[in-house]
Amino acid sequence: MSDGPVADDEMHPVPAELWQAYLSARFEVDVGGGSHVVLTVGQPASGLDSHWQDNIEAFIVTAHNPYSQLLSAAENQRRGNALLEQVRAEPYSFLPTAAVDAANDTAKKWPDESGVLIFGATIPAAIQLAAEFQQYAIVRVPRVGNVECLPVNVGEYGLKH
Image (cartoon, rainbow, N blue to C red; front, side, top):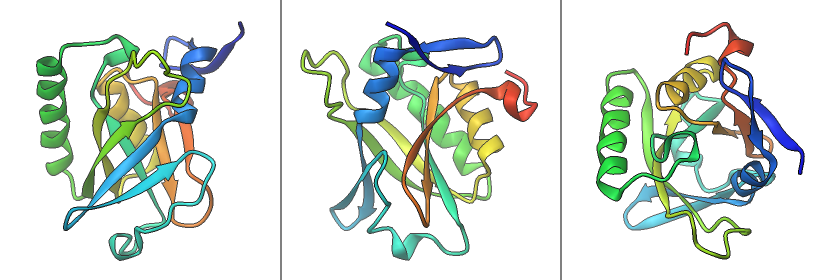
């Protein structure tokens, strides 16, 4: 099986099977009041109208399961809290998310992964944040256009890993 996109500054390809799992995941965004918006790669982002403000795009970042190595729930929670702390220190607004139901995860190998939908970040800032938490990918959510999965290739943006 061929490899997927290249991620990280050491130019390691993401295994193709893993990349397909990323592309098939659904992302539930907690928009408040017990309501959720579901985002899917390749589809427009709808239901976020009141959250955009002046932003033209947002990014989903998680801290769970670095480089797709399964961690305990407690360790993922600790990492998730560290991510929230970093996001709160920036001038961003954000909403909680969960990556759920990868279509090809019939064995249920992957638990749901919490993360954040960050408004106000640039692509390089989102890539850098994801790299700090050893992630292979982020999800770009444009105000207009389709949701897409982007490899965390810090070298492409001249960033440090």
